[in-house]
Image 1 (cartoon, rainbow, N blue to C red):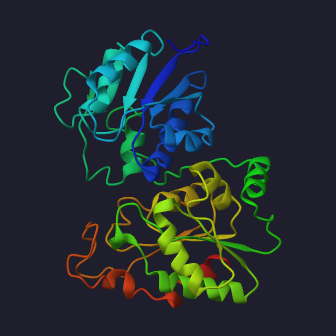
Image 2 (tube, rainbow, N blue to C red):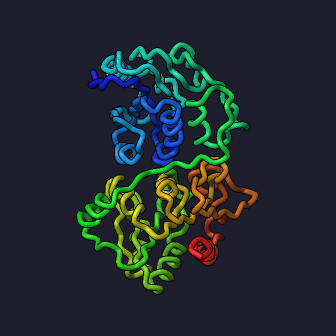
Image 3 (tube, rainbow, N blue to C red):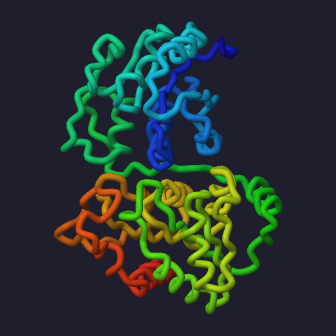
Length: 340
């Protein structure tokens, strides 16, 4: 069993995507606001630890060592039994049946979540989801910490904290000099698929513009994004290509150090918004009304073609006009307006 420091504690079962994990922060802030003495632990995949470490409300991150989509009933039972007697409340954010199993096996007295997948019994504080009243993911998460029927605030803004010493250590580890000029971070990847990726040629055009103005340009992403960042670097000499060289925490630190971020709709886009960095977010097949970057310093660009948002991983019409026709000039204009 986990060590218990005597505080009343709540277990939050977290989501499985970077962007969604960022969007749990307003819920955590609400829980702390309502009960400042309450401890908050988050059960989530191990990759999420760097994000949770940057949320001031989290006491402890608990790894869920089960692959996305796997049932692993016996393993969930063992994890639940190890948590018995620690928590008075659980909030289950994913909508799947299996995501409610650990709090059930832990015998947590109050288990809150939306109905979804017939979770009666597993949950005992069941909420009905009104998608029209709660169109955004961040609103749905927040609502599970509020009294039923409470309307969310007009603006819910996730916030991640950044430590200057940690950022400096990351730059030293990566062999990147501390910025002596304004720094642009480009996030050209998108885990979901190519229908969310602005063309590498367009990113390169933007990179060349800023390099010519004396800026530093960092390309940030996972190892899966390396072919895209390599293509950009080949077209824009002077970029520092860091894709695949960082873990999530280091990517967070690079973004926190940026003077401007330009990103596809991706998890790193939400990270940039939560750090409050000036951000231009490019949307193709996805809907900025559902998961927008939640920051007053963010600008969303989308062409709103009749065929979009289609929510497909690849363009079903084969032309990807929603992204190909969104010009570098439009992005540069939006970025310039942000910094005016």
